[in-house]
Amino acid sequence: MIEIEVKKLSVDFEKRRDGDKLNAVKNLSFSVSPGRFLCVIGPSGCGKTTLLNVLAGLLEPSAGTVLFNGKQDKGPGKDRAMVFQSGALLPWRTVLGNIRYGMEIQKVPKGEALPRSQELCTMVGLGEFENSYPRELSGGMQQRVNLARALATNPKLLLMDEPFASLDAQTREQMQLEVLKIWQQTKQTVVFITHQIEEAVFLADEVVVMTARPGQVKTVIPIEISRPRTYEIKKSALFHQYVDQLRDLVQQEFLLQKGMGKQ
Image 1 (cartoon, helix red, strand yellow):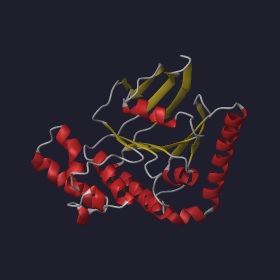
Image 2 (tube, helix red, strand yellow):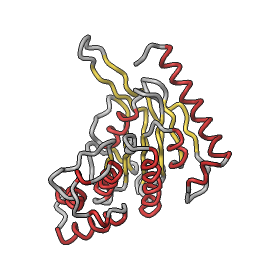
Image 3 (cartoon, one colour):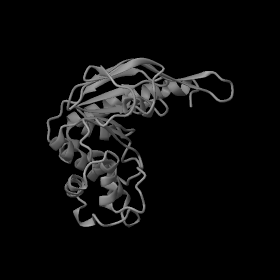
């Protein structure tokens, strides 16, 4: 497990036309305790993916620090893995081959990589499809492969950037349950970006609400719903209270963004 502490993080991008800087994230601070499931929500363009790229080591901040277990670590590391909206599976590789790819890069011996790939394939419910190719899989099945590939190297931190955004509602719900089941087994620290407020409440221990750009932390809402969670909780008054509270907070920032003419 890994602890994250983000301190006064700022990320600026240069505009191509006039050379001015675009403040994507400004003075953003929050922390994640080891083994916790954190969701991040906010209006479009508030810097959620930018934040995730910094945590992944794919983007260097303009200011501020990110500490992993109390240490500053620049650049990608073996302790972190990322699942994107639509992960690029290698079309010439089977399900097992795609899952094994990250381990091959890290030069894990084949005798270890193969059984690990098979174990993960079964864990995500694709044991019968280990020799199938991406073109033979549905969108939900492809995202299961992406998830298994991210887990293959036993990362301490799992970063997920709207991984279910392109899936239909039913498949999305199935994948939410799958992620929770796997997380409860591995107890990795998770940072999960989503636009779906109901998804954030269902998955998270805490929800970070970001402001309109430049993104800051508006507030952090603890989700005090017992685990393990099933879809029965979505019928509860407590679940809907959290959803309404978070929706109001995001709506405030959306209206502010609209009023300031931000895109």
